[in-house]
Image (cartoon, rainbow over all chains, first blue to last red; front, side, top):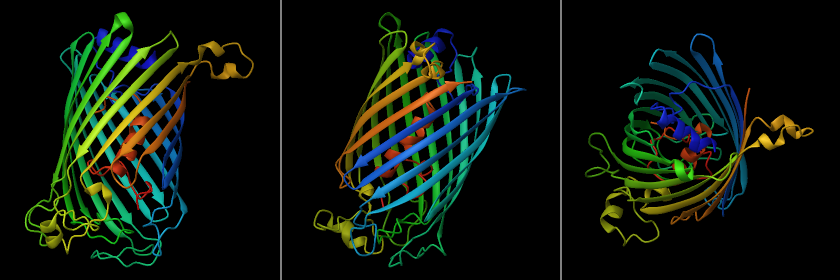
Length: 379
Length: 37
């Protein structure tokens, strides 16, 4: 009942520790395997993360993951369907220091694959308020990416990427969140996030030309309630997103972006026994199209946009109006029952988790299976 | 703004949803490591 008890204990003590961005890193090593499968794409992702407390109120965290992506996307090659596998490595290192009621964290993340490289610096400052019943947190960062292309170009974008001459993409981002314990079993949170991107925003394989700047915003609210009598926890999440082009775009009359979306999510945690907890998640996501989106197959659907978008061309299904629905079931098992067992006893102090989700999409990506498994061991 | 208890799971979700929807903030899914090209 680890996750539910985290919330219950936190609320009971009137301390906002459900946000582990605040909590110091307990000494913990976690390994996970994540699998995503839709008709044209399969992703296998092993991950390992280590968190370690250090003297003087400091801690350090590091993770490494490997993405193995196998895709048969029709857009993956210049000649049509082309099954290929590529690998992406990602590593991060961050350090935190806590002084009285305030924690500062700074970190760096690097991601590399055959045609894309990304450097990210990130940080956060969080402070506890009102007798430790509230937390205010500011996060910030920036990334510098290089977008390449394996095969010969044929792109309509002003920057034509290649492996030897990739195109730059820059992002800066920030977020402000506030968490408040309302009652010993009710926790709430509100927040705002924003990012500003400029550079090569198109996909290098889709023969498209997206605007060169994008200002993105989101507000969110969350609430978590725990019912001790039934060992049940419920979380409700809502998020509203909008974006726009900063300034005037010479290729479009008005704002070419204008994507708006909402996210509704609920999670139910249920303790089954001392060692077992289950979680059910349901998430619904409706999204409107970008203003410059033109359906290439049926241009009569938005004729004004298609006429105007001759200089801005989008072929990513993500920029069309769409809906997604995600349901997932997850089981946590604290492996105390393995104590004293030959070999398996080594794992008795940790927690296993297993989940299966189904991701329904109205786009051409079609529906996906999502499987995750993991094991966390304190040390 | 992290209500999620598991940062690894949060990152995976951010990557998955960010590569199939248009409303992430652009820093959760570096690269084409999403099969979305």
